[in-house]
Length: 439
Image (cartoon, rainbow, N blue to C red; front, side, top):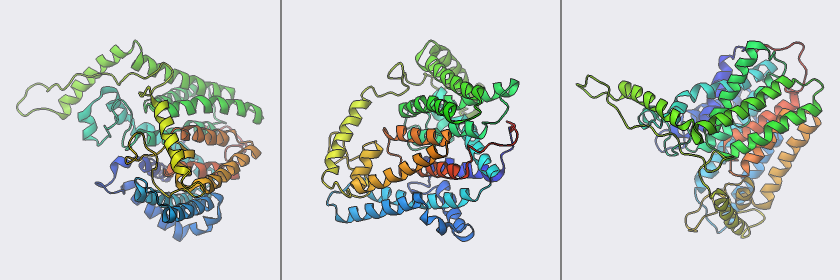
């Protein structure tokens, strides 16, 4: 594998920190990631002429979106939940987007590829310990490293919500295929690539997000199909390897968590827990390690084809969408401004509708939805015109995922649109290279 430079690793760490929202300072909405972004934003203003990117379609969207949300909040009589927090998140995401545009647009092709490779390496390395905690249900180890335990049996790592981690992982396998499309997938290198892809998919499945699983189930075959139509020279071994690694990762997860491998997993967990307890939880004066609670495998999935838990998730979302549409109809043109306006049973306990369309309708109405639709249609058309199957697949899986979650206020969602836009503009995933790249 080619060396990843330190700048790319640093950039990937900042992106990872943007979803590691459980590591913020106390109860403040600011952590290491936010501080790094603020400093980079100021640096980009000074040395990268970031203000010149305000006319980019993605920035025009954010300017229009924030303006509509501000006007709606001023005139709407309806008050939502987490209004100030959501408004601040939009402003922060817009600043993050301006910084990302200024930095990525001026990066060379090699720097761009290095950043994508770093996005693949960083989560595999950083999620090793959270993955161990997921398998062993080790509360002590999770507490030691500050790992979120509010979602038992889900790989959440340092994200306040596991779905933040899910959206971070979502497009990375597709982009890795783009970066390594001309690489040599033979012999030992093929085996290594296969195992790395399997490990990445397995980590993603352990987040236990059915939306992420569905997005990959749609996006990976779609990528293969479109690539076969658009690319003059397609590396079939690479695409077959990707699909096989995904299927094997899903099968391995179902075997270990929902199938006959569950008892073997529990036995292995007990051995790991006792080893960990001997290191981290010894009692003074004891000559032998102190044993802690016996392990239990992560909870079983709610269906044979899914990896989630809630058997009534469809009914819950239907209720949220109905109440969101009722709130939207009170101000259909510009919505009610930032915040959550839906609810399940108690109208006083408002929450998001968990759907990009419905949540945008309640906040910015038809005007904001049309603005976003124009931006996304522009991206899709550009990807089609450039015959870029990788960017097209990423744009589609982002929409599939957003049907079950509202991720617009997450900086990585905007970052991924930016990466697609710039990759299409520069031909980063379509221009043929002179000779195969090592991997």
